[in-house]
Length: 250
Ligand SMILES: [Zn+2]
Image 1 (cartoon, rainbow, N blue to C red):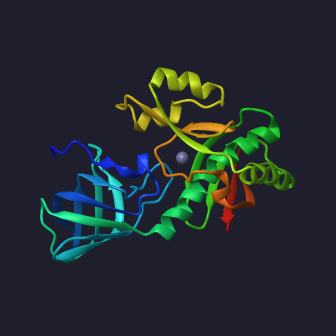
Image 2: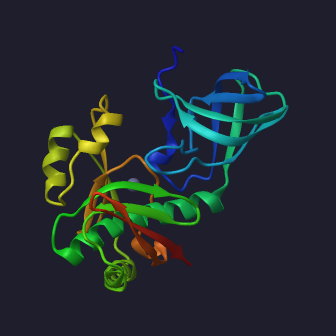
């Protein structure tokens, strides 16, 4: 496909719930319809964050968006059930399921915050080796001897940062500058670079004076918006890896 990649509205503003865009491609596959727009606020599945769902409204039809993913060229593919018809070149209106997305933003931002809460507890640059988020909550896998009885204190550290309502800032910088910048937070481009090797500017999400992580996901603007973080359980995954599951409450 000759398309050069969809402009991702959510990277600049993750609070856009509705948007207008032009249809660049539409096709059928296995009883589903796939659609590519010139720009989109729909977040594709990836980086441990599930896709957004919602509707894309045309003049003579609508696509009920179930799956959203990115192809190898950076095009965001919206896939779902088409009712009526939508044509290439048409201007359409996209509406994302905001309740779902906002919950995912809160859970995702809590993941960033919790990584540093664990490091603060141990006073050591603990490695988070994997993360997953859903509308119900998230999970983080750490290479650290986290015991069950440590969870209340880690939770307290996290909720202190929530109650301080710290700002969450998006910064862009060159890979060289980013590597240097991230080092002060014991982070690197190691995991990020593999997926984003062509990017000239690295997107960094910083919770003010707490943690900075390279990330292409959607986050809330202040830690207070996350709501109370509750650690639900801890499980050993072997090889020194401990999984923590958490949720966010209103
Ligand atoms: Zn993130």
